[in-house]
Length: 492
Image 1: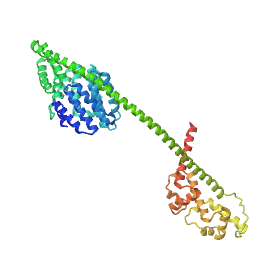
Image 2: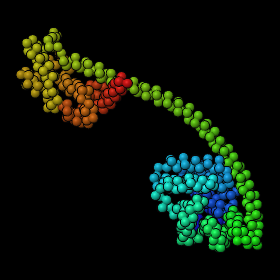
Image 3: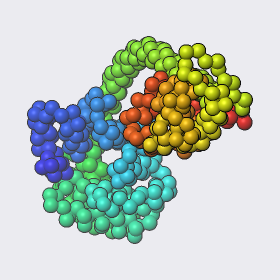
């Protein structure tokens, strides 16, 4: 934070501290942030070559950076490349930054980066002398601009530049004054920022033919630029001083500042040529690294695809086998239901089976008991949890031995199994006929069909059907879903 405060008035110290911090840090994100700061310090000095080197180093191992760091790196690269008139390369990074901004989930972070993106786009338009479109972009900023004081300061400066070039001098003055006022209120004075604003504001006085005021501002700007040794800024200020003195017909001062301008212009041209060569080398190296990374990624994808295909095949086979087993179980249940239906709902004419070694029961009594059992099955009295052989015999006006013998002879079950089958058959029919039942708890189903506990119901259910109640309900749900899908397909 201290190094960042020194950025605008002592960039050399920022660079020194930043380079020291890089040697101490091992956090990838923090290293990227420090290198961006060093890059910005070199920009304050007008050293595009080193600014580019650190900007590209800040983006090293790009995939490991968090999305915010990626955006900052891309915007920084784009800004420097546009300054060097490498518009095609700059626009590539600017577009990538926009794509990443669109991916941000946090609303305030996204809005803040969108404002930064608009600022960069406006600065591109200014370089292209497209000031009318810049005005339109100013209106696209959001409310979060007011919460970022430094970003708002940058907007005030570019607004002043745009309005000056549109010859709306009053508006230009307002925004330059706002920028100077903000600069004066900083805890640590920013020589670079103030020098730029003073130089830009002097242009307004030049157009208004107030050359002495323009020269005063430029001299103040020159002193500040000298403190940070920024060649491009020196060049601009000396050029404007020479032009003002030329209009005033002050030949000696004109020659003095024009000669300085020419020297700086040649020096800047040499610096820019070196920086452009560096830019192409760095972009080429980045391309090669990305190519290797993409090649490795493609190999990994192929490996993952092959492994995934094998896993998918294994999972598909396992799923098929599991599904086949489930379907088999459901078919068994359906088959059981059909058998149960035939068993418990016999024809109206009762056929009395010939007795072998069983106890003798009069035929009339046997037929009467079978009719009563049929009526009993068609009722829901078996769902009472206190039903017993003695209770049912009493209701049938017979004795327990006769009733037990009839059930054993005609149903081939003892009394308890007979009752349990009726109960299970009853609840299965309910599950099939009433969709609400598949959503009820097992304990409720148990109580509904006459069992005193969840566990006894589950045990009997599995003994009779071969599967648990939960599994049966799951299969039944799948079957119902399948039927719905088939109905939809039929409608289509």
